[in-house]
Image (cartoon, rainbow, N blue to C red; front, top):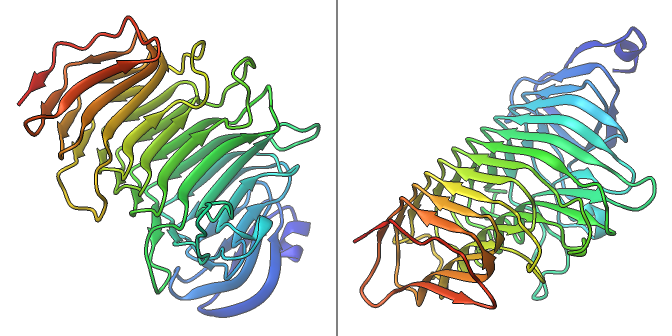
Length: 356
């Protein structure tokens, strides 16, 4: 790879076999091609630079399987299988993007599989055992992350013992109060296995509500999300999220949870449209007391088909303003409360919908 990089780039072929390394860096402008993700295994950490392509490989072992060199951009990973996690600190994740000073942009994962993290979750969920972890670091010189695409990927496939994830399949968040934030995240045609916590979390948890610069936009489209023991999708104040044309199974607390902290002046503008929610399907999780928990302003829930399992409430509006829930078809058990409004919610439009 070094020789190819010295000539300005090119392709290196990796034949079938297991190649034991501690860590290996793929230099800028190098394409590394294996014989298939079940045949050519780099059994150690891979660090990829910019304009890098990895194809038809298995990557990783215990610890972080994969991350990027600082300022890597326009790199693509196709039909690769990632395994790892189970370490501590930065070794807790299978795939790690951003964090520290490792800015990256225009990164694509196409038709890849990400195994269940090898870590064992603890009761406080403090060890960060995500399958894919993306961090915007707002400290001076910290990492900026943007234009990340996952297309046709399968999250939480079996690691030989279990499927899913001990925490979150895909977590994207902001650290240290950044005024600039991660953005342009695209997740299309992907499958998420049942997670021990969440399938997807879009979080600005270190960003105060008074600051500008919430993360976003995000597109989640054409995916199958099989659920999480807490939530299936959590949108924690990211702006401009579109969740459309997906099949979304029930979460153990709420299927979709929006908002974090004081949402009085936060207007995420999340659009949830044309999805199918087969919440009566047994995915191993018991439906929580609130199915859809919406906070903040300007959110839309339209054109969805919901087959609801028994719960105390289908929708809860909390500090919610000018939300629109129209044009949906709801099939709900007798005795289910359709809408509960609380904590100053106002101006929300709740009809017309078809309720069976």
